[in-house]
Amino acid sequence: MKRRDFLRRPAVLGATAFAGARLVPSLLAEPTATASAIPAPTPASLPDIAVAEGADTYAATLRAVELAGGIGRFVKPGAKVGLLINAPNWWRKPGSFTSPDVTLAVLQLCLDAGAAEITYVIDPASDYWSRTPLGAQYPKLTAAGRRNPGDWAEIDIPRGVSLKQAKVNRVALDCDVLINLPIAKHHAGSGYTGCLKNFMGACHRSTNQFFHNGGGAKGEYEDIVFLSQCIADVNLVRRPDLTVCDGTEFLLTNGPAGPGELGHAHKVVAGTDPVAVDAYGCTFLGLTAEKVAMIGMAAAHGLGQPDLAKLAVREVKL
Amino acid sequence: MHRTGMGIDYPFPPPSLGLLTPMKRRHFLRPAAVFLLLAALPLSAADDPAALVARLTPAPGWTAPEAPRTAAGDDLFDLIDGGAELYHEYGFKRAVSWQVETATRASIQIELYEMVDAPAAYGVLSLMQSGPFTAGSLGQGSLRFGYYVAFWSGPYYGSVTGAQKDAATQAEVDRLAAQLAALLPRDGALPAWFGRLPEAGLQTRKFFRGRIGLSNIPAGPAAELFAPKEGLCATYPGVQLLLLHYPDAAAAAAQLARAPELGLVATGAEFTRTEADGSKIVVQARGEDLFVFSFTDEARFRAVADGAR
Image 1 (cartoon, rainbow over the protein chains, first blue to last red):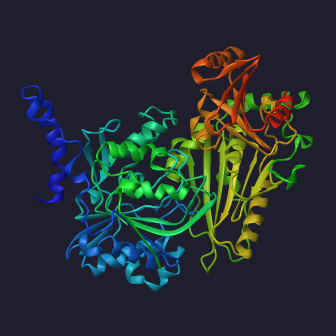
Image 2: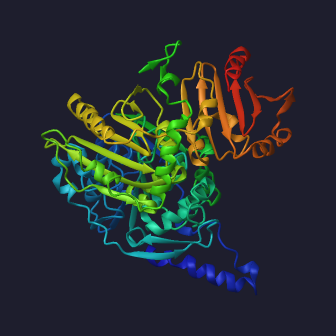
């Protein structure tokens, strides 16, 4: 069964379970999370979190993915890849967007692996490639990504606590390999934004406004808990196959837009468990997973491991 | 830049420059009449942030690659996505974002937000106080950080951000910020209750208008005690004062009635709690306000508390 067909099953399963639950409840107990969202076990030879540190962000990205098992572990020849980059038109200030050097490195890796097609889940800003000197050096890479066609699908989330339905970009749903490229930074609403929150980039504006409006009522912008739960819930839709998180330069304050105080860890973090990567990434801001509500809520869904003490973390310096 | 006796940079002009004092009577009637008139009119095009930014004249070599982006009301979400919620909490009307750049791709982003009132504009700026900065006099108050300038004036909050830190880019940041601030009204008035903060030793003052703003202020356990709608978080040497403002004295008293369940012990007219790290929280009821002090040095606390009005 192809991934795209499997993804539609949760809505059907949910409906069937509801109907069937009245007759044979014990046979139709819902899983703790959709199967596609539960992290697959990491091979014992590989770390849960791979971290490469160095002044050369492009090289650090290549190294981080190598430590995580290499791009061939995720992208097979002929695959259709979706890139979810946190660099839309509205993030332009320093420390607010995923470094284009990270994106260029991932594009190179995907092409090396023989990807047939690379499509942006959300198009990067029009001046994105001009923010790095590498943009001019790698014209084939900057041209390798296809713009998002703008198709959406309504997805039921039966396991959602606050979010029961989301309008999600079809590239994020239908691609063979979804690669999440967030930046770890401050967020005035949730305290932190990284891998889990970046999935909002795959959602339609109407869905994202629902997250921020505390239940959809206009004028109510205060419900931080509701926002965090919605973020955890939407990550039930699909777990990215690989997350490569930018921890090089990031907002410590006044996020998500900035301007604000900047932090510099010069790290690129790769892994398959978004909860784990966020548990690591939030430490760049002096936080712990316990202090970031969405991390605990996502863990409660079975989406990953928030306890760094239980994770294999491999860090290298270039 | 203003320096306290402790050598600490004071981010805003001291009381003698009028920012912290209540509005005088002769200035009260005119703004009130104007407000009533404006309230009956549609938003003025001349006050439109986009119209103001359009009057800026970038230095030679700086050009705009695209038209300014504007937003009003809920559309602010399209402009700054999740960052919009903080502005809506303060009260937001409309905004503009404009980017200029050079042939070598140095870039500057100019943003101007028209908020519902002057306290909202001031509040947004006050939350920006973090990391090293110097205070300036653009508009009714400005802050200069390593790569950007932010200011408030009347109901407007503005920022000019240079993506590069080189001298030429930052010089243009300063020039554009000064230009923009000069176009703005300087008649924004802050609430009279702001003046209840002790003046002596005041280092920083942040105004919040809801949970999102408060959650972005590192106020410690004091911020978790009561349910404020708005307030001030002020710092002094060794003391933090969280001034929680309520609609009336009865509302403040209703909050304070929860003191026992919060572990606060009555000591005379005050309520006290000792934290696990040995620091203390003292709560004083002052009419429609609750003054929540956090400190480790009793003498410093008393010095600040005695200066409160």
